[in-house]
Image: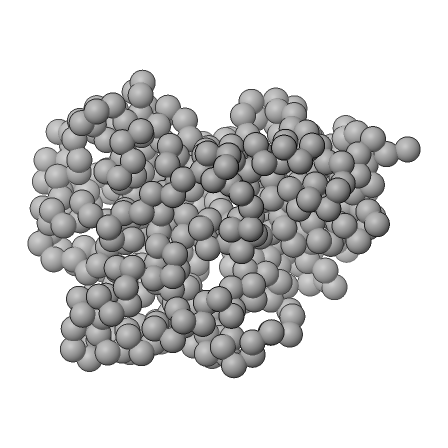
Length: 472
């Protein structure tokens, strides 16, 4: 007899989303988390000085607010509150000038001006209007007949292109920088097919949903999910690492918030040889090198308007293209692409009064042991003279540190695997159902399954729909 209808391994956003979807269907569910606290890629911890709360991995959540599943849940009743910066994200062009992506398409187009503003308006505006029609297609398994084929085609016929092709539609650096920085979230060389879809998607989400922070830190998202799950009768156990499937309590279905290579370690002796071979060929993405700062004051940007932006992308369009190509090939980029978030400017609960946190990471080759701290701080000092004088404390996380924190982050890959065209269409591996495994009743619900990386819970939601068929 099964003790539970389902057991979920991993209490990150996807694992908790899967558990909630099952509990909503009236199934008994237990979530088992290896770490002492829940969270996965959405934990908030005092990494530096006392009173400074840092997001360990994800910090900014356009797809958290944009997730159809999260929006269907009463998470506000369990403490979740979204904080919106005046400007979702910005991209400095030099120490004085920057380009800004506003909530309004029109305001962003006016910032760009001229032909580039018109190009942005015509390119992004219709897609933002289509979001409600295509969100379930974008945030779900790719191999499905679109419910709104014309709207999906408007996104797809450009999205399938390399981002470098999309950049050619803009004459000046501002428009190119916006699209290059957004496309770099793919962690792919921008000359690869499909990278244009990332260049379109992230501005779309900024206009449709904003790029908000969770008040109190990303931990608030998983805490709200956990609270709602427990209100439905779901159980959560922490501090219990699962290294083998045999260690799990009996259940009709097992859902694993792990990457395929971690599944191989947990159940390799039970998996067919061909499946093991295919998992070993699964392509991982490049890595991250992260620094969390405790600051005595806000970042002293030379361009003070950057203090209105929640997120700042750093790097010229040309340098971003070169950097993403280099890290894909395992080479150190001359100038790494940087992502910066400054949540305490808009959420004072993150730091002591008058002081601030800063979240920064660079895209780097997977598994690199190189020290990127000097390159990161040189970029910050160039755009914010006197930055180093405001540093109270810092916490550096190398790719090896990230993997030690979360076994899914192999070599510092925080995306769950490369978003190559093959691994988007057939993520994680070619199969009739991307959430199933060769083991009966065992499913994957991690960011290695569609729709991929991000704090949106949709991987868990779709995996739960598959698992429910087995449970029934």
